[in-house]
Length: 146
Image (cartoon, rainbow, N blue to C red):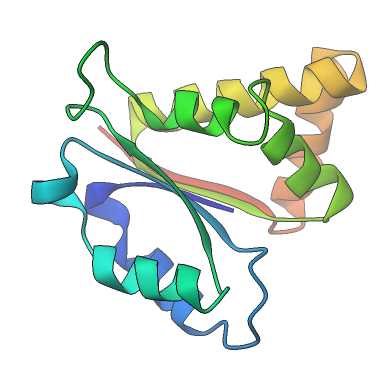
């Protein structure tokens, strides 16, 4: 699973490009202000979706009529509304999570992941311990900037 803001998306494009086996376990949660102005690699993402190399969950924050849709909310709502998608990706599919973007977004996404895992595993301590294990094994990484 790759969680990106618009300015950090090129590395994810390269990662998905290399997945040629039709395995749509790659999930991209992509956030930007406007689909029309900021949906970098949008045509490529849609092609990857068609060829089952990617599942995309977009969050276009300024395109909403009411409120704003940010990546952490899109992640929470994907797959049922309580973070089931991320829990399933990590626990059942042994998936990796890579977060890239602004520091506020990255922190909010990590908090969302911790909350979803806490709800499933029963304690925040256990959830954080799991993320630390994933980090040590290269399956959880955050690249963030201010």
